[in-house]
Image 1 (spheres, rainbow, N blue to C red):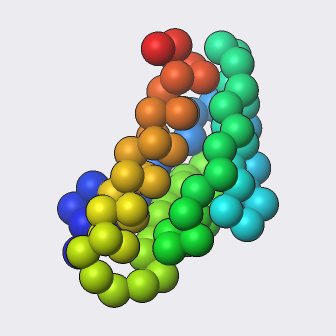
Image 2: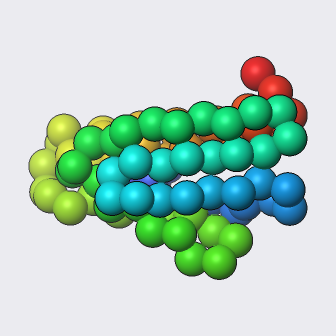
Length: 83
């Protein structure tokens, strides 16, 4: 199990997140980031929280799971604080 992947991402006020299948759009005061993700990870938006889970077993799937979560978290930070 990915230690990074299982942590939820809290969405701050002023940030809008849209999930359409494997495509995530994060919009905030500093801009917008749209990204397509691997079909091996499931992205779920629940209120003001994002969570990512792995759809398959295996080392590669766990790596993708943690990477998707890290990219989404960095996207939220990027549209609020900047890069």
